Each structure stands twice: as structure tokens, then as C-alpha cells.
Length: 431
Image 1 (spheres, rainbow, N blue to C red):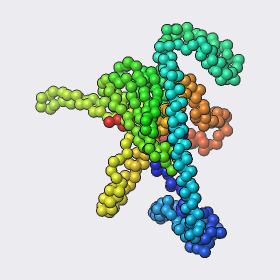
Image 2 (cartoon, one colour):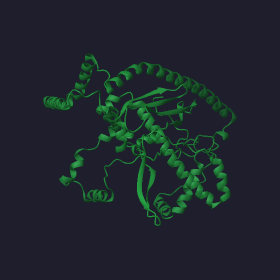
Image 3 (cartoon, rainbow, N blue to C red):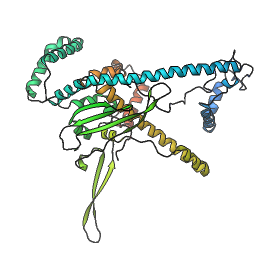
Image 4 (spheres, rainbow, N blue to C red):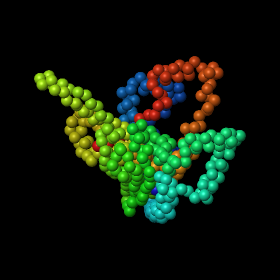
């Protein structure tokens, strides 16, 4: 279950049509059926492209017709001789035997993961004790950690080792040796995890500072539960917050477990002001007759990491019923279909983000928490984000960039405020 689990409905918008027709039928049983579409003569492609570009209605109609063909059977197999079709049926039987073995493999692999996870749990428990300051690591563990750190920093530090050591000693003397555990460990680790960091607001950080542990446990059925444990704080009264991910009992076509749904938990905030998932607007109103004033309070949901514990849910209404109503309503039904399609796309994006967050925390954060705290894991997990041409970032001052690039940069600065600011995550509101 460490690999991403395939969604039920894959994107087949780029699939070939017909799907099961060979690319070349020169030697197939269909060579007696030549294509009926005339070949586009060389030189006419630009004219056709221009015609389609100037006629968006025609282009939309063509795209709609092609979209209807996606996933439909071409009839190629049905036209094969019976003897050949029997061999195809035989291959399907052989493949089914292989898929049964694949299912056994995945189930045994899950049991193996569970068995080894039991061995990890004592190490995770000790990690928590060190973080909260209940125990100190042994001298052997400290020396081993130092040696690992020295290997990583050997090439980076070079001649600056002595200076860095002096700075570290000064910082330690300034902070003092009375610091308990590792303050802000899990908040720092979460903020270094790119996908999760995008959902954390400043108000969330005030709550997440009190995290003392993030752990997981497998369910008796396919799935896992994430557990966030908090110390005493002024924000919420929950000791733990949980998020559970459930998978279907049957494996998918590819032989992997298929994600089904997630369930969260209720968060008991100590006050509305301490709840980072809502904004509170207050204004005063005066009664014209009695001249008395009252305070009107308006509460609106807002983006927050803690919406993670109130996952989006797929609609309960069957699409078939909606389509029947749409057919009865004619054009109004078409508008409803478009709206439902947009809603489905938005919901799918939210579900995908929710699933991705759970997988990131389970597979990346929990096993390598200290590397996310120190930032060592960032370079390995997101190498593409740091592969940019550093020299190119300063080429504007040398005058090597053309005027077009300068214009684009100016447009970008004038058109958007804070281009480098954190982008808001997909909407996930808490009830």
C-alpha cells in the first residue's frame, strides 16, 4: 500500500479511439475494409486548422463527436474468425489466472507491511519521547547521528566548519540548555512537506505548534488511520484528531487496492475565536425606534489545514436519475449537465488533494520525520523544484535577456501581487 492507489475512474480522454484496433491493419482481417475518410492533401492542413479556429462551434461539435467514441468497441475482435477468437478467450483465461496471483501478492505484501510496522512502532514511540523531552537519546545514538550528519555536510561546509561550530556554540549558549525536547518539531516538518505546507495558514501554525506526535495504524480492513496527538493548549480540547482512509475490499484492474473514501473526526474548539476554519465578522446595528444597539455576528468558512479532518464526500444522488430529469427538461437539462460536470470536476480535484495529503503524511512524513524537520528530505522528495538555472535568475542585470522577456516580467509584476506568495489550496470546508 506504499504505492499510490489508482482511482476508480481513470482519465481516458487521451486514450486512442477505437481502443482495441491495431495501429496498422495491413495484414489483419480488416484490410478488405479500406477507410472511408479521404486523405488530407499536403498543404491543406493549415487551411483546415484555420477553418476550425475561425469556427469554434464546428470545432466543438467535432470534439463532442470524438469524445463520444472514446472507450467504445470498434468491433475488431467480433470480426475475427472463430478459431482466432477462441485463442483470445484463452488468453483472457490465462490473464485471469495471473491476476489472481497478483491479488494474492498484494494481500501478502500488505500483511508483510503490517508485520514490519509492528517493529517500527517501538522506534516511533521513542521518537515521540525524545521530541516531547521525556527521554534523552543515548550517547551511542548521538554519536551515530553526528557521524551521519558529518557525512552529509562534508562537501557543503568545507572550510567554514570552524565558523559554523562557533556560531552553533553561541546560539546554544543564548538559548540555554533548559529547552525541553524539540519545540515545533512536527510543525516544521509539516511546513517542509510541500503539499501539506500549502494548506497551513498562520492561524493553523499557532495550533500545530502543540503537536507532539503524528502516527498511523493499519485497519483490520484495507486502509489506515492517521493520528495527530496534541499537548495541552488554548485552541482545542481534543487530545487526538484522526483521519481514516478506506479502500475497497476487492483489488482494482491493475491489481492494486482501490481508494474508496475517507472519514474525519469532530474538532472541539474551545472558542469560535480559536477556530482557524472560520472567519468571524462583527458589526453593530442600531434600532431606529428604541435606539438600542446590538452586535451582528457573521461566520464564514475559510481555508485551513484542519479542513483535512472534514474530508469531501461524493454525492449520494445517482447520476442516472439526474440524466433522466435532464432529458425531460430539454435545454434546461443540458445546462444542468454542464453545472453537474463542473461540480464533479471540482469534487474530484478536492478528493484527489485529500487523498494525496493522506498518502504524503503516511508514506513520506511519518517514516522520515527528522529529515523533514531538518529539511534534508526536501531535496530528495522535490528535486525538480531546485533544478532551476541559478545564473539565469540574475541574467537581467547583465542585459542578456531580450526586451520581450523584460516586458513579460513587468506584466507579471503589475498583474499579480505577491507572485511568490503561497497559493491557496483546493477548497475543503469544515461543517
